[in-house]
Image (cartoon, rainbow, N blue to C red):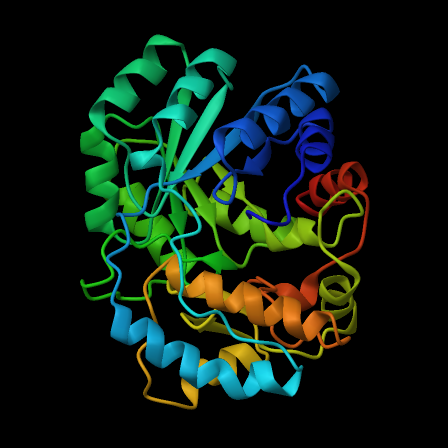
Length: 329
């Protein structure tokens, strides 16, 4: 997950026999290069670089103005001034030529895509460099698009998954398929290897996914509690206390994402005020989180977590990999 993955965590997972990943959705090309080079310095094993392929945001000044007004009482609570306007704070890989050029130079072994697919020129050039490509799918329709694009493997992201839902088109109906149903559906109808993602927290969950026909699993929430992750103390406390439920919300970023319920997610459900699109809404959410956090309140953060979060274990990454392997036996 972008925001919690670190080069140290990715390298630790890869060194322990897994496939470590770094999320670059919130990075520019220079910062992503630094992260990749740090991973390279810490491991000789394969690793993955994850990219966001969302469509460029369509700003709506009135929607953004109304959303700021909706959040203003919360800003006032922490004696902070709300932003006058909102910005598109993250660039999609589809629009980021510098990121593309950097990746061709650094040649990570694996690149994965979320929110959609890259351009065909990206796929062709990455393949020329010998880079293996993954892409997330939340439905059979999306999986068929992944397959048709020439991607090498499909990440089947179930509705249980923490973090941003990888749905391609937010205007289309989302069946909200769970991991088990989605994995089996894709295994039966697609020719590519399927990687199961969503709600998998232990070796028994891994074994179940493999039994359904998945070739591998992708785990995010399970590794947030590792000391190598970038999770702050408040985030770790939520995982340790195991009392908060998760929810799917657009309130934090503008796209559906699963995380721990908090005051910001409640602001998204307590009103009919439209939420700005991704990543414009994120600009407001991050500003409010910083205002609250400066006063010791962490109830407005993006604490992404899947439905299996209460199964989280605060172990070093290498030790967690060993435990997962033992649990599969």
